[in-house]
Length: 490
Image (cartoon, rainbow, N blue to C red; front, side, top):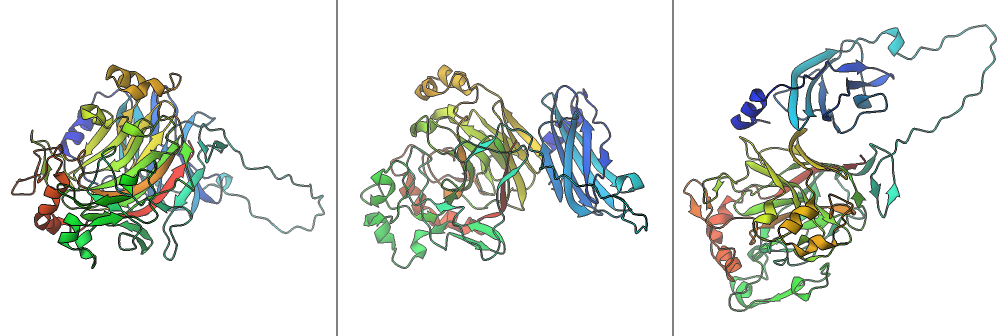
């Protein structure tokens, strides 16, 4: 991954207050290894990336990788794997990112040669004629360190345990892990210009990956331009969370048209939800004008309410997928800018108060990246390829009260991160357009073409549709492709 010059200057030019100690390698079993550094006050994360016998090209994702967020009982920040066989002479190439006192520090271009001594290898059995007494062995259950993570209704688990995984193997189906959302989004969210449906054209598993792709509704034989302007849409099997009929059907009339795009959105709501943990999603994000991927955590029960994000929403990864897009003030806001964070309201500038961003020289749809979110009772951390680009430690209740958000009165005063103190589930989708994410007066493409709709206009969706001959030409890679989804306990 190539990093922006601004980020490199920030890293190089920071005041050195911490030096990463040498990484200690150990081989406690015949397979695998441990890599660790000692704990010290102020250390917040140890991100370790390694591969065998192949050097890294800058900050690539490792074959053996983990974001360690707490030291072990021996006071070491430990990466541990028992997967690879490591004969003597194997070279472990690795790089390390450490967060210390809210600053980032790096060890790069490192390598370690495996040399196992007799003491690190289990002894081989030998044949002997001496008669010995065989002592009975006791099987000790695997240790289960405590964790604050719970799942599926408060079930306890063990620290670091893999709770949920989907690698989308060829021939697998969505059920039982994933459920399709079938509905028309309203302005309580982004009012994106789509209907979410379960059509196999919009979501499918191919070559061991999940693919979600938006399509023009006019590509369907029974849809014409006239039907979009005057027809009616009724979604069978609608999954409106509030049983709102306007999410399940629409009749076109005057300024209201039928959603011009069909897309897909899937979630684990009825199979897996959790409170506190670490999420990793390896994905290639879409590219094309007015598209945005939705790699979210959604509230399971909407405990604090449904309207105005009263129960919150967490963004694992989000981009505005235009290849070139500038805001009215000239800021770059296209697919080179990754955003993650949380929403506590859908209102005005407060909506983006807790979104953090990371700029990249390449579009985030050019290749696969690993998008991560670490959620604890005290903070939410955001990562991409092991690099932490954002941390949220704000008391959301106090911030919301300062901005007169009524939902703040419902949030627990004893939980600084409320409403993010309940169970959430994983949600993956692709949205298009809408009235919240793309700012008015933004300019797209080399010719700096103006955004074709205004977010406050009652005809926003209509003007977007009228401009389809321009933006649809840019949809050469509109799909979100997901390699895997993993959720770990803290």
